[in-house]
Amino acid sequence: MHVTSVARFEHLFRAAAGLDIDKADLKRYTDFVNQKIYDLLLSAQAAAKANRRDVIQPHDLPLTKGLRKNIERFRTLDEEIELWPVLEHLATRPRLDLDLSADTESRLPDIAGGLSVALGRV
Image (cartoon, rainbow, N blue to C red; front, side, top):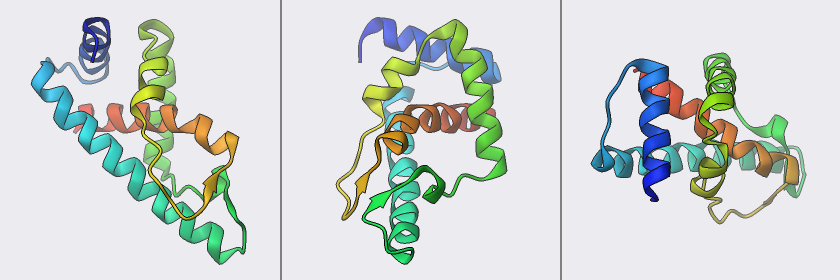
């Protein structure tokens, strides 16, 4: 992870939850976010299959009200921090049986941001 990326994550966690993090924390954070995105995509895949579709659409993602609120908080914070491009790179797209629609794929960085805000607040 680049130094500028580390600084942006530090800023996000400080702004979202008043936390000071270091580079070692970012490895655990990255693993956590990628696992949660994978879990969400597995559930979305099951929903798409149940509806006999071969592509995962955004409405297949099981986003709770709380996660949607944290995604909005992230978007507000990201206007200042500009972390979205970094999250776009970090939000891995795990291999699934079904493909993601372009719209679903484009939402993954925002979801990673919402998970980041939620994690920081916890």
